[in-house]
Structure formats: structure tokens, C-alpha cells
Length: 317
Image 1 (cartoon, rainbow, N blue to C red):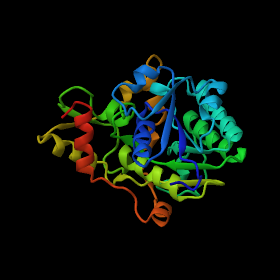
Image 2: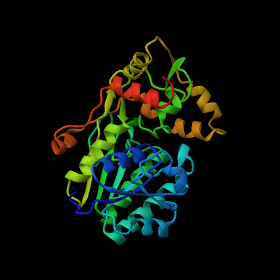
Image 3: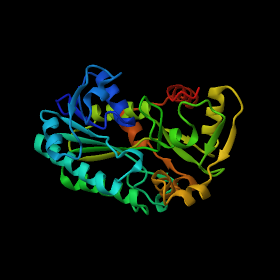
């Protein structure tokens, strides 16, 4: 089953995008999944009854440790919603996961981002590129990985581009910028520049790749992999896929970064979006040679199919 010889896994962030999809895939592969959440009854609604929901908070070190007893893997997929309070919550939660993993002898799996990298690493990101982030969130993500690596805990990091898709994939650029969940599409809002390439990760594919890496890589040391996902080489392919999925012509509008800038002092989401603007202004592609070498291929749903399913799940189709 797994190179840890222990198919019990604790998922932190199981009600979120990548956490929810990874939970689903691990269950399908025969893992015994438990998940820490503040509201087990709410979390369990509409989800697989095989998940063991445990009441607790990732900010509570004792709760994380108790939930982790007996597991071989801890998936750290928890993030503050809406980018709120990253500076107060993200690193303490990471510390709690590391402490629990040390105590029970578990491997930590961290879904990573491209925030760790500054423009000096662009346009092609490989796992060995130096992490010199320029943003506050990027520095926090880089520090998360540094603490994880320096802890000596066995760890697997899988970095990817912007998420889309999945049952709980509603807290990302696609669903909070490009389209409006629950509403018939009248236009597409594109935050990027014409001709600038962008990296996207379809969550069901990313979850499948991560689960396979958990099972097929040694459960010792620190390993990182890059998931290529869908590379929109000129910044137009995602919009074209959305148009094709809805079967009609849609106007593509540029995101008003001026409006985002003006409102950022009072709108938290806009302030956080503004900080990551640089990722839409420069071409960025993740090189997945290491995943291909390890797995033989990268799970890859065709873009049109992935977008159509995503729009249906968001109530936009």
C-alpha cells in the first residue's frame, strides 16, 4: 500500500480544495482517513462516511497530536480562508503539524505553491531553483518549507500553480476572480496580461499525483516535486476553454487592478490579491520532469473537460 507500512492518514484541511480532493483519492486507494475539523457534523455532510472526523483546531497543538496518534502520514493542507491572518496562523499551524509528526513518527505531506519563488526564478521553475520570495505570503510559505526541512521529519512537498476544480475548490483565483460561483456566466474576468503564460493545477489531477507520490516514494528525508498541470502559454487558453464549456461567446474583461489597488486598504481579499499580482505579469511554468521520472506520467485531465466539470460544480454552467 505505502512505503510507510501504515495506511492511516490524518488530513488537516480536509474541507478545503486540495485537502478535500486528496482525502477522496486516498479513500479510493484504501487508506484509513481521519480529519481534524472544528465542526465534524458540518464537515461530514455530503462527504464519504468512511472519513473519521475528529473535532479540533489545527492551531491547537494538543488536538493535532491527539488526532495524529497511530498515523503514518499527516497531510498539512490547512490554510486560513480568504488569505486572512496568514502572519498569525500559518506558521503556528505548521509547527503543530511538525511536532505531532515527530511525536508519532509520521511523514508530513505539504501541498506547496509557487509563492515561494521570486521573479529571479522565472520563467521555468524546477525543484532546485532558489527560493527568494519578495512578498509577505511568499516569505511565509518559504519559511514553512524551511522549518519542515530543518525539523528532520520525513516530508513530501508537491508544488503547483493556481488551483481550479474539485468539490471544495471555491477559494482560488478561478472561482473568486475569473467567474462568479452560482451565477450564469456573462463575462470572464482575466487578471493576466496578453501573451503572458500562466500555470494552472486541476485539483483532482494534483490530488491523484500527490497520492501516488505518497505511495511510491520512500518515507524518509525531504523530497519536493513540481506538478506541471495546465500551462496556458499565452494567457488565452483558459478563457477559450471557459467559452467552449458554456457553448457561447463570452466577453473577456481585464481585471481592474486600479480598482483592486484603491480598495485594498479596506478589502482584505483585494489587499492579498494585489500582493500576488506579479504572478500574472510574468510567464511562469513548472517543470515536472521529476514527477515523470518517478511516476512514469503526470495525471492530466484535458483542459476542456476539467473546465466544464469545474463550471458545473460551481453552478456556472
